[in-house]
Image 1: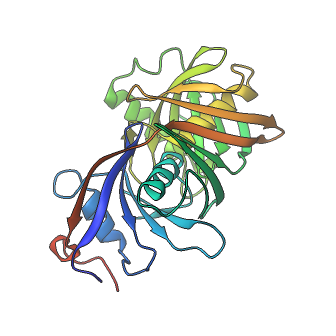
Image 2: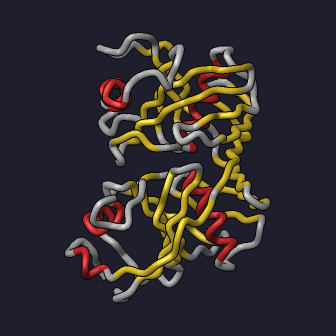
Length: 279
């Protein structure tokens, strides 16, 4: 394990990540170290960590970890940051393909906009009743499971009120033992919506969620509320655009587009953060 690890802090529409190029496979963080690094007061601070590893079948492989240190199959904004990161450090060109635990991703970087073509949305379910939650909830798997509750004004609830509702949705038994990410959604036009996401693994509201935007758009389209492409306004005020083709049970040809940028660069010594890594 190297004593000094180089990283970039990046964000996709405010959804922020610690980015590390590790094609040599020398950095093997444990969940405790990842949680330390993502902690916002004593660590670097982030919603998650992304490692770029080598691949024999694509430009690279993306490993994504939530801020609690647990590995997740996919992160839409993380994938967009990974594409920008790979281009910036010369790992790939402006058009690239990379592996994730949820499948292969095709990406394109055009100036300030990064687009990723991700796997299909599956498992669509509607009209789910959740105890304690007013209104019916929809569900879709956009690489990770998401539930969406449609309300008149997603911005209106206070933080505490949003978190109470989101946590009931997130831990609903009908979504399995690991639960689901929870989204509060308001349709604002034929091709637009605003949304707030509570992400499992982060266990809090994030400023944006790419897979949340995808799931909310597909669920809204299945209810006849929107048509693709859908402009999704995030909690941080940025816009993510979701294009897709509705199909039975979900959607295909899914593309997520939006900003991705570097906030700063630095190094850290894993030993400073205590145990939690292995060589």
